[in-house]
Amino acid sequence: MQSLWSRNSNTQLSSHGRRGLHRASRNLAIKHWPRLLMGSFLFAACVRTELQPVDIAAEDMCAFCKMAISEKRYVGEFIDHDGNAFKFDELGCMVRYLQDKDRSTVAGYFVTDFESRHWVKAELAHYVRSLEFKTPMNSGIVAFQDKSKAERAAGEHHGQLVSFADVFEKQKAKTDGSQRY
Image 1 (cartoon, helix red, strand yellow):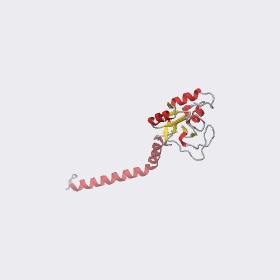
Image 2 (cartoon, helix red, strand yellow; image 1 turned 45 degrees about the vertical axis):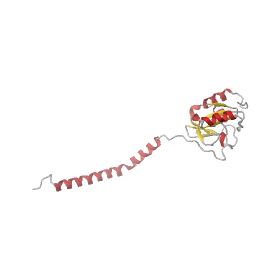
Image 3 (spheres, helix red, strand yellow; image 1 turned 30 degrees about the vertical axis):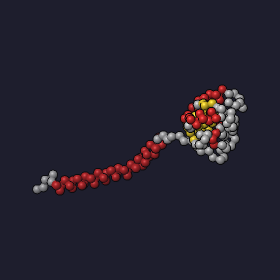
Image 4 (cartoon, helix red, strand yellow; image 1 turned 120 degrees about the vertical axis):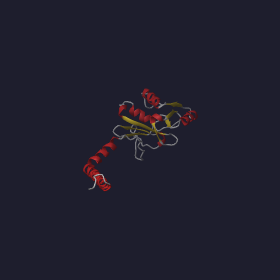
């Protein structure tokens, strides 16, 4: 008589147990794959991605003054919560456009570095206001990613170093868009 705990029965039980577990998990996966797939899509949709600026295309026009955007070193844009990009040929146009708008709809602001022409988050940029900068609509405001470059430009162009909040507040105080800063 063979014991239930003998080597052969253990091996067979163990082997049968593994095959049964494998079959059960495979059957479970096959049965529920649509739910697993849908769950993966929902998870991916919920993962928040970092907001990115939208590149300027040759046919883009300023959302405020309707001029063609031709010089990338002065450009600014904001993206609303619906994903719409509003592009501006210079920072003064962006500020004037937002002057009477609800800014809570804005998801992010971007500006281009005056020297490198690369996008920078507007809140992280350093700004120089100078009459010597000949911007498209004469605001004289340019942005820099690097504070030391902004300081150098302010000195070279007899300008003033300002923050993004300063740009908005000083622009807001102007009632006539033709005035220089």
